[in-house]
Image (cartoon, rainbow, N blue to C red; front, side, top):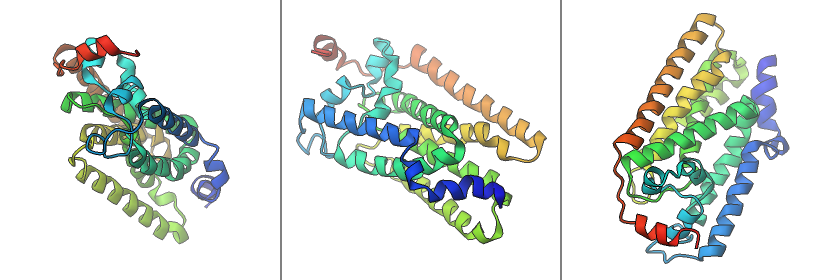
Length: 267
């Protein structure tokens, strides 16, 4: 049980440590950005933004995903910045809650750099999928990054299946059930209005792949470690490569808003 005590048990018991993680720091930035967007843009009518937040124009100025600006204006930083921007109070509250509790725990369990890379890569690929499948929408939120974080947790649980002491197996099974149900429910409701299903699915896929790559050290068999990592790196590289190619060479996002942004950007 020493390995379990060193990793899962210590992380789950230390709320103070969870609040001193990169995950918690990102939450602080996201809350700050939310306050700034409302301060600048005010509250949009609920018919326009049901999340109790600013209008879409303000969100775009703060870095929301807008495929036309990414592809036609080469604003590639918009694949990262939407992770820090949220549509409104009802949008940010559940995301920050998950990130503080689950994110803080996993940040301690994985180690900071592994957690952050899974979170970031999942978020970026989620925005790419959003551009490919929903190119006409303005997209914000850390949901893709959170989906990647949750799906990587399943990989962690599976890889450490036999390392959990007998008295903690019920807790492990409960964790697996909760995280699996959370992912299924989130993906199942991803096609609701105003929900970015592209970001959800993209984040979940890369979370599994990078969970395998970075958490594969938990496997005992050396051959299995190498095989699963090589396979996951290959699939991730192909998905990123083809998605980037498609965005650059073939994607034709709606350009109706481009003239507006060119005339009004940052004014």
